[in-house]
Image (cartoon, rainbow, N blue to C red; front, side):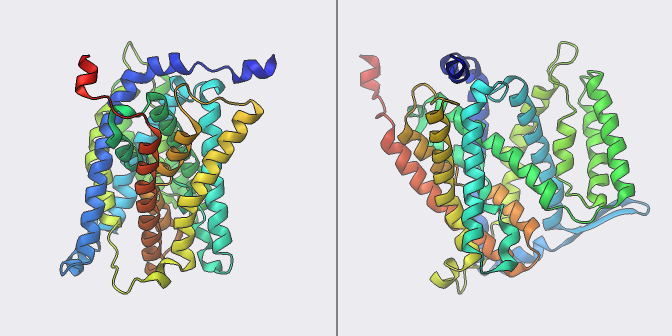
Length: 409
């Protein structure tokens, strides 16, 4: 009886409740995924054209900002990766908090399957990467690269199949990706943090306490959260902890409900178009450019890119399907209504598209430009295989689209 109570799900009512909000999210996220694909492809073309030198020189242009002695001097690429991506992480933080409070992750009944699937989808790719790179100790720091899922890219491919895709399957992919993001954020905080400046860290802590006080007081205006988030970002950047984590920490302070308003959702909806159509495409354009001159099978099958590609394509399948199957088998979870194991398998392949977060972690893991280029090759090749295979697999498992004549009949 206890096991039955644990495994009892409310898949149909859950889908009915979240469908309107989910539809709006998916429309923005999937369209942003298509934009990201175009931006990444453009970067790859330019990086292998006569304009390559101008492209790379542009990313190295120094950009200086500050007041008095408080100056931040970084090349444009790092402003994008440390600054612009903090906005992306702020949005991720808002999404995680909303899902945890009233979405797909607010109860074990809803979260059990995606939690188990996401754990497997992070662990197995890392294990495969470490196995392939066991003889290359200089590469081992990149173990987390294939553990990531690019939700915008994956949803962009998923939405190409239109209304044939069950809402429950879309919701499951979203939930897995959100948990994946939580895992990636934790990994960055624990394993990719440099030496810390205690003074700056104290300043960040005080700023975060002020932000939390505004949230606890249920302040509905977005202004104090935005201004204090910028201050927090500067302190975190100067502290040695990766600056993008400031975005996540600040987002956790925004209240879900305040004075008959919903500031968290308001900020989430306001940011989504900017992140989907500006922040992520700019990141993709700045980070996907890699020269393919001299790249052959020996390059593709060298340990670093092979470990990433195999971790994504093979590890995600084994991890997501294997852990999900085990969870269902022992009674911790059940498949969402209207889905099948073949569809879950196809979804695991889409989850192997690791573009944005994988490239981001790769930039944190390695300082050697040759290794960073190898990361790009591994991520691009693995994600391309996953996108094509995932689309074809899912198309084969879904019901045929209903014709207009059949609908009218």
